[in-house]
Image (tube, rainbow over all chains, first blue to last red; front, side):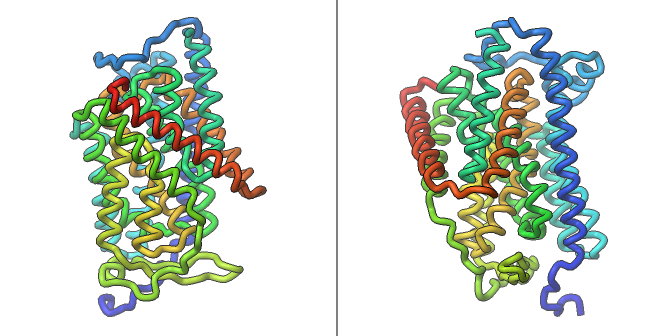
Length: 132
Length: 278
């Protein structure tokens, strides 16, 4: 019966859309607030510093891994706070995919549950640093 | 240049880029990279890192509004995100191997294409008449608001559309841009998805696509807080203002002017890539 069903219009997507819209908005606002706070600290502590970004510096830094970034943020280092805001920003669309997974599971749309899990796996590969 | 001056100028430039990007539909990222590399002499890898971050911010910010209006098709978005995220991983891996000159060259070509694409009139196809087999299999269809009612549409060309989306994801991961122009081309021209649904669903996918390569960029050190901060805040603020203005006024002249500026920037990037200055 389910197989022959001529593709039901995705009912219930309306409620899902509202939740997703709210989630995206909150995520971006929280991220922007954290980045702005860290940025203010950055300007206060290092405003007169002469930076050099003309060449790429491939040096190890705690700001290149999630534990390192969080460690710097807890030490109230401006760099760490800004990077934490960026992590929140990156997490927002990822969380959006997780919410979609829940939404599709509630609709018992297993095909889309599998597709969403596929997207999450690809995101995990990128975010966990398995590609470099 | 002291950091306070650099960050203020980057903020102002990003604000303008976000504003124009929203007004023209090109997105802010396409101007940020030439601005940082050509005007400030910043290494293209840092520019790509900051741009990718701004792309996630604008995509999520705008998607929040569009999703509620009922144009965004979450199913089509999720289906195509399989292609774009895989492409993004490939593109980000490639970015670590290719020389900066080649990246600048590819960037210039994509930029020129995006600019020409933005000049196309936004004709509104009413969707495919008949769905193809893959569209039926993956339940790719929907409805969108049109003249006060819900207009249903079908989808076709799923296989070539999917392939082009993988390429769009690859360009996003390689260049730190949203590559919305390629995404809309795949969805509106090939898959025959109505224009407004294509643009909003494309925007919806950009954040997830960018998130796939963002982790790789951070691990490589492309994302530095000193540059990402003014760029992210500037582009986000600019695009929020821009999308408000967009609803109030029609801006064909501004659109043409911006497209012209972008073509000049594209030529400049190609020239710098060929001569090896970037």
